[in-house]
Amino acid sequence: MAKSCFSVLQNPVQLEGKRAEGISRILERYGNHPQVNAEITIAERWSAEYFSLEKASRFSALARDAKASILKKLEQTIVGEIQLIEVAGMAFTAKMASLAPSVEERELYSFFAADEARHFQLISQISSPPDPETVKKNSFLRFIGELIDTQNPEPLVFFIQVFLEGWGIHYYGGLSRACKDLRTKQTLDSIIKDEASHHGSGLLLFQEAKLPQQEQQFIQETMGFFLDAIRIGPQSLTKTLADACGGLSEAEVVQFLQEIEFQKKVATDLGHIRSILQKSDSVELLKRFEAKKAFELPNIKDCAKAIISSWS
Ligand SMILES: [Fe+2]
Ligand SMILES: [Fe+2]
Image (cartoon, rainbow, N blue to C red):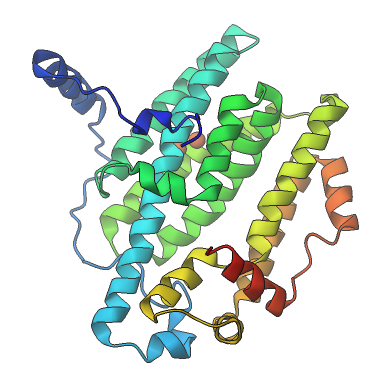
């Protein structure tokens, strides 16, 4: 794994004996979260409807057990990714606190760092331990890690607080509304509350016009990467179904994308990103993406090709 904020997952130093006991006692004290107290009540957190899978003929034709195993895998992917985003969040806020240009901003990022640690604890209570293999396989997580590791604070305010946390509020909100497990729902709602103030402070701190030309250029190119990833559609959902079906041809992927009406979801997601850019006064960025037609829906065959090529 390339060196990034996720390196901590690779061969972590194990604390032993008294030290390990003492540190875990202190962490437990900080991890006393009265607002999340519901028991995990059901085996399935999100139904096939949340993923629009009930409309897909290949999914409907599967046996009950195979369907349940797909939903379980999707759920593990979602929760595992959120957990690793929190690992990255702890690295981001620590970096921003140490490089802060004022005591007030250092104070702000230190409080945010405590929020991210709390989110990590909450999500870890409903998931398996963080898995470095997930980072290896997930280009989005690797990319976020590299950004945090290498970028200056100003572009990071944009990528992490304005874009990613703004996106997170939208994405986690959808997950929470559709979630059938009360404890998971409460965990997501508790995270969303904090992310709203992290995102709000990002909107206040980010000033596109004051960024040097080179950093504006970098933000434009990098945002293009995120937008393209969203426009091509549900890569991990399609891959999970393909694995369960012993593979899917390009025509079958096209049919699947049509059946789940993925363009409706992509249109909502793109609309949300556009509104984040408008709220943050990212005038140049918006102009550039409008000119490149980056908010327009892609051709479904191109999406299927891009999804299949992402599997290799
Ligand atoms: Fe967080
Ligand atoms: Fe956050």
